[in-house]
Image (cartoon, rainbow, N blue to C red; front, top):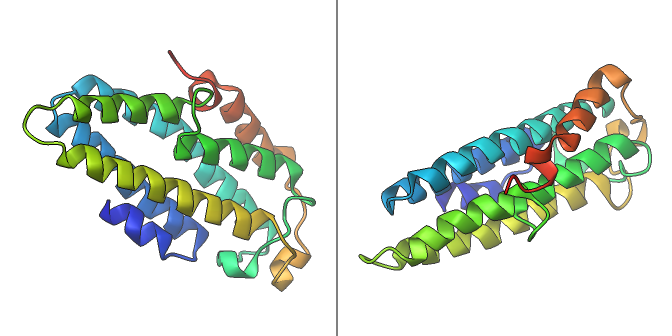
Length: 184
């Protein structure tokens, strides 16, 4: 929950993703705390794939925007960076836990289900639910600030799609079932 709160306040694209990782590790610890190691491992595996996609996508954005990392100076990259945008959006939806289609939904659902059935307290469930909302918020903010609107900085104004050496790994990670489609 703390990692999600910190991620909300970040403006550096890599820092948002880094604190998001802290938040997702918290989900895994929550699963272990309520006795569901299977949910923790499931989330660890799904998280590895969609977070790898997001960090590679962030690298693609930073490279194309001439090393600009501040999302307040980006914007408008959806048009000139179509492949990066599409793959980043899929990774973002997986991390945010968009229902039914993405593995992040199923792994978080398994954790929250375990927390709901924990006999000691429902406090972990409530903390997990708040973190789910915060995760969806900071991911939507990250996507909107980076790819929508108009270019707000010189790096974003001159950005272009990267060569296949950078975009092909993004496409491969998206087509991997563990990122986009549930592993169930």
